[in-house]
Image (cartoon, rainbow, N blue to C red; front, top):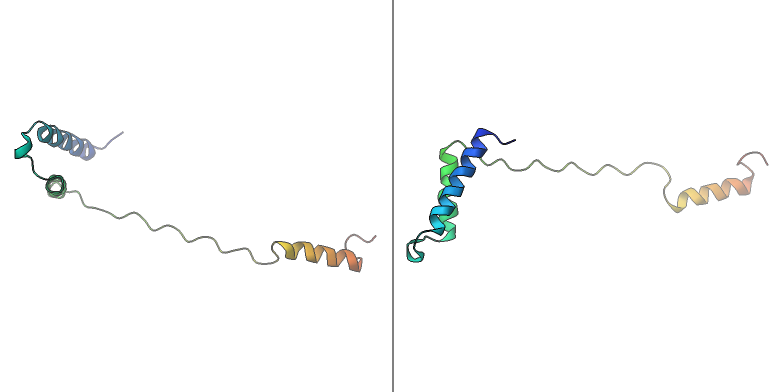
Length: 86
């Protein structure tokens, strides 16, 4: 569901695109001018650009043994007879 403001902006843009497409080629402004005018219209109607939120930091790696260190510790415990009393 769209907000009223979004619907109004979409209708305005559709009308502007339609008018631009049906104008004589020599009467058309550049696409940059077209986009600039539309952004100005949006801002005049209360729109303000809000940048996207920053991405959260990656979680810190877990503390303790990782990778082959886990296997080495397990083998060392087995060699000492620490595993399960066998």
